[in-house]
Length: 467
Ligand code: GUN
Ligand code: FE
Image 1: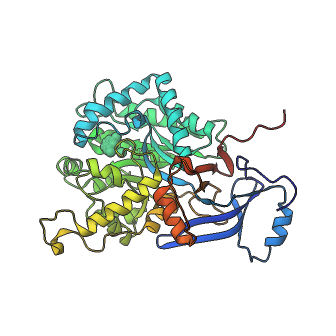
Image 2: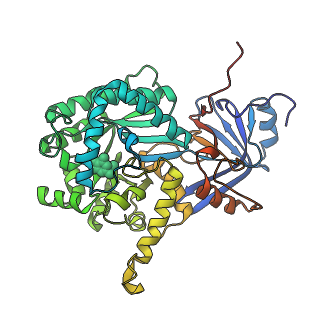
Image 3: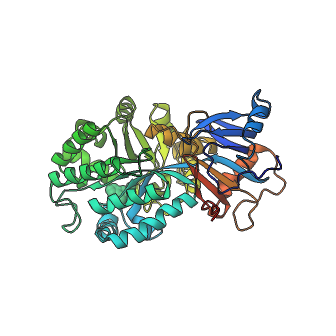
């Protein structure tokens, strides 16, 4: 290393470089270990070059970037930031609470009353700031957020993401059905749901500090049970008009799946499609009960699924058949589903996805004979789970994030495996794949030493400049 002062861990990497050992999973069954690798970042925060130790230009680039290079310390590893494809931002205060009732009751008893309180912008601001900071501290560099039904509080969540530098997609929740939504917490009618959504889209698109578009709007019908036909079709048209992302819940539980069949006479996915809500930029949360034909339809439309394995244990009555979806070429990423899932960590989302796939494969009822107990061929590997939590989520959103390769954004997490207060104990593990496995299983927030979004350091706070 040069005698000159190099960049420190809290520095921006724009126009600079970082040298260290990195892990990423560019394909579902491929873990790349980039040992002693130099990643060069351009002025816009995109990766300009990824140079192995023996790359022809490596020596020249090291000299060129001398003084602008961050060297990760021994025991600290870089990996792409996580893409959390399903977060209910207002539900963070009830994380870990109220997980003892079925979905419809959970919504009406606990969740709608909590979300209704976000009409109070001070209440909202205090909680949204904590959430965004906590997700960044857990390594989530991109989050796809459901806000609440309120226009102003939804704008506020977007403002906070812009201010903190988190890459985010923020949707005002549309919910206008008078029977399923409480009077104090719903859009007055379909027109209000649509005009409120439009107002939030305009706010985000025209925000003076969002010129790089790192925060995007999302059309967000909560789920078909909470929306009128007029709202669903109006929101489909709105998404087409603005060319923006769409998110909703689809066939999450027996109840939600059955609701669509009895109301529309077709599956939830088919109904969403008929309203223009199944597009290349649609993210369907859960989707446990998609039929084979639904999976083909979702795949043809290019829509994606946010697989929320932990939440599914509580509310979905089943395990999402992830392997089957991947085999039918459905794009899939992972979500925490805060607070249906009681963890804000995408490391936990990876583990839950991998573990629940094993339970689907083997089955869970010991009273059944092994050959009837599970669904063979369902398991996914830890590498596949990590791929889905990073590159897979980026692919669903059509954003260049999740891989450490030229052209992708430098959304990066530095994991320090040596911290005594963290959850990783490497002992004498030296083989790189084993280190990766230990990182994903053990990493806690205390292990996350630094986080960059778009090449800018968002954690820890950048060192103060000269007075
Ligand atoms: N379906 C409709 N709203 C919700 C929600 O907030 N969480 C979950 N898990 N499912 C839903
Ligand atoms: Fe959800």
